[in-house]
Amino acid sequence: MGEEKQQSIPALPWMRDPVDVTLSQQLPLHSVPSLHPKLKSALEDMGISNLFPVQVAVWHETVGPGNFERDICVNSPTGSGKTLAYALPLVQMLSDRITRCLRALVVVPTRDLALQVKQVFDAVASPLGLRVGLAVGQSS
Image (cartoon, rainbow, N blue to C red; front, side):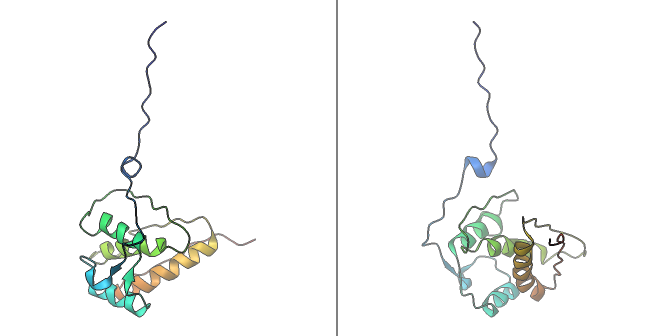
């Protein structure tokens, strides 16, 4: 019998090297590295004074010290702040674009979630002069 070749299964970077988030990683807004002042004000207007742990982790991996341009996967319980976790870096990165055109697309599985996500994006994008659109299917 011949030798069997073991197939290697490719793994994306976020699968090979996941970032574990601890509940003690909240961060006051004034300590968030590189946070745009208008974005900070928008968050304060929303009653937010600290970023939740998942938001801190995503910020550090995208805009903050990590600043890696790559895909990320965020897995966190409902109510943990995931929407704002990916909205903040997107809005921050798009805020300095000169040409107005479609720059980001967020796809979610349900109409209700799409409405919720748009509401969060509107709250943080509008103060920076960014517009948010919504495209949803019909309800039954």
